[in-house]
Length: 187
Image 1 (cartoon, helix red, strand yellow):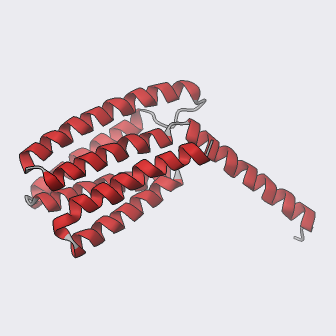
Image 2 (cartoon, helix red, strand yellow):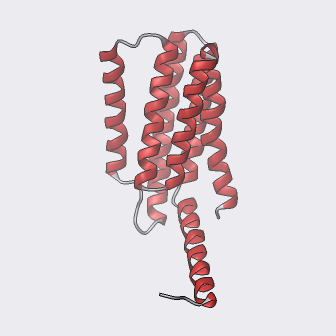
Image 3 (tube, rainbow, N blue to C red):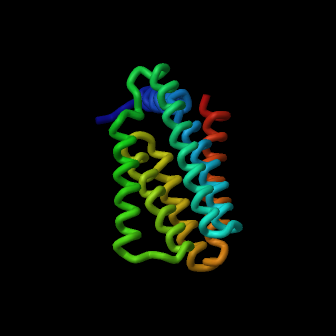
């Protein structure tokens, strides 16, 4: 089948238009807001894990995670009203709940007690969640998950004493600034 140059250019223009519409839909659909919220949680949570005593850092994580969950529910509810077909329904929340439960079970069964290893395992599970969400809903989430997993794993091998600081900057920063970038450039 031969296509003319004009037909090819028209097809490429249509593809570019669909890409732009998809980006705008994602930006309006709340994706960037969730990245900003959880980037903030990760940054301050991992920073606390680096510099605070373990028990205090755990309390900080509980507070930040609770606040992040509440904000995510509020943002999800507000976004759902603006989007024709909601991307974030109960299945997404149940997926994250299951992932948290399985991560906790694996940490417990494997007997992981070193706080640095727990930080890495929790981070890897969270990024696995982003990869799956990327496959389901929005491809950039998969890339974010893969990149942060790779950077966290390299940090654990090369600078284990500073893993939490690296995760705060690379993990939290990637999520936070990725969300800001999308808000600014995808509208």
